[in-house]
Amino acid sequence: MKRTLIVAAVAALGANAALAQSSVTVFGRVNTSVEYQKNIAVDGKQAVLQNNASRLGFKGTEDLGGGLKADFYLEHRFNSDTGTTTGDFWSGDAWVGLSGGFGNIRAGRLTSAAYYATADWIGMHNHDTGTSEDKLYTYLSNNKNTVSYQTPNLSGFVGEFSVSAGEGVDANKVYNLAGNYDAGPLHLGVGFEKQAEFDNKQLALRAVYELGAFTFGGYYQRSDLEGAGTRNMFRLAGMYTLGASEFHVNVGRAGDWENIDNSKATQWTLAYNYNLSKRTKVYAFYTKVDNGRDFSYFGATGTNGTVLDPSSFAIGVRHNF
Image 1 (cartoon, helix red, strand yellow):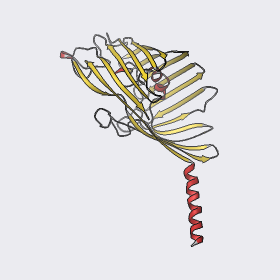
Image 2 (cartoon, helix red, strand yellow):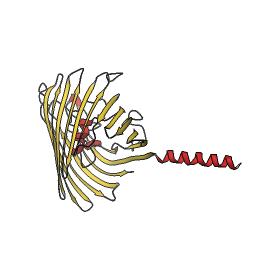
Image 3 (cartoon, helix red, strand yellow):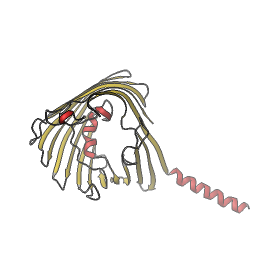
Image 4 (cartoon, one colour):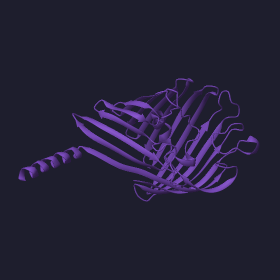
């Protein structure tokens, strides 16, 4: 009996040691706003409850020894206003990988590294979500069936290369190249995407600078799409913090597509955030897109196919956990 108890105790200690080398974290965000919208889902005005990219996720790491780790990440997207699933159940990132001194390798569903290095940085007021998200950025990655390599941090620089296999419904191979550089208050980024089948491509450059209570940022993007031709686009953002308050302004301008007349557009947003804690904030914003006369980047279609200019005034709460 004593021998059995000793064996059981040793086995339990071994199991606890193994568990100590692994970690799983549950995380997420619930972000919901009440909005008075014009020409967004319908032609005209309406009051709605709006989900802003709410999510539930699981991530974990296992220490394999010798500096090598196994990592995984699963992110479920849901509509906080209705409780329904947004697209596929794991419509956020969902991947498994290995990391160490060499950097990391991941395989699965991965959001564009080029987007994260550029446009995502400039959506300061609401993490580039909901009706005030960037409507003008050219996004080419299909996210699915992706293999990625990310370098270790090299004196403030981290690079990433990925390729999405051309399989299934999204049968278009996409190459993605990105780089981020951080040096104190200065943050720089570059992102490039190319769709092999159609030879569509985009290149973007981003800069953010922190100056005391002020943060300034912007990016420039050059897009080249089959049929539409080339287009230049830029976005500028500014934030001023005062205690728990944040004041935001964000303006984006897209020029005409080379082969589409009257396709230019402007998007601007004014926002105020009040941070109740590090994880919870209340906010308000007004956003509007001025579409080109013959081309709509976002919004409902008017009678007889007319192009409408969408806008929204929102009050919301965001909680991270």
